Length: 187
View 1 (cartoon, rainbow, N blue to C red):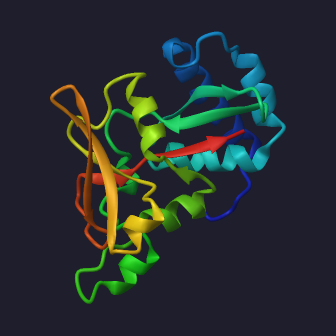
View 2 (view 1 turned 135 degrees about the vertical axis):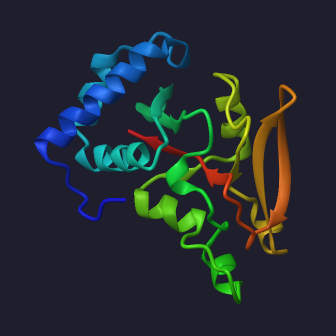
């Protein structure tokens, strides 16, 4: 992930081209929305462009999935087929990372999301994403875990198998090469 939170003009243009192409290719994700409205909102929010770029370079393939009329925000989700490659092999949060005595992963999902300026999907959002296509057929994704589960040492994740979205639990300190997390960004 990049350190500077400023993108150059050429990086901005490249990212906007990628996002526009993805937007036009996947119209089922954002019916009734127009790219020009999205682009106008993006160019007015350079810090959001930086976060979208972080989603992109870590393999998330962000795309618009919703327009929140109340807040007047476009909502982007990671729409890559499998959990983003650049965000796998991480335990759930800092507490779980620090609790590991050996074989610590390099990262934890919650800190990565925060550092990228995005939120981790919750169960409802993950299930909404699955209505737009088939995701995580071979991988799984951590999702935002309710506090009462996390207090007991657990964390939850989801995937799609047998044409069904499953919700599972694990110790928050666990990590797997095929588990990452999906995020969202409001712009």
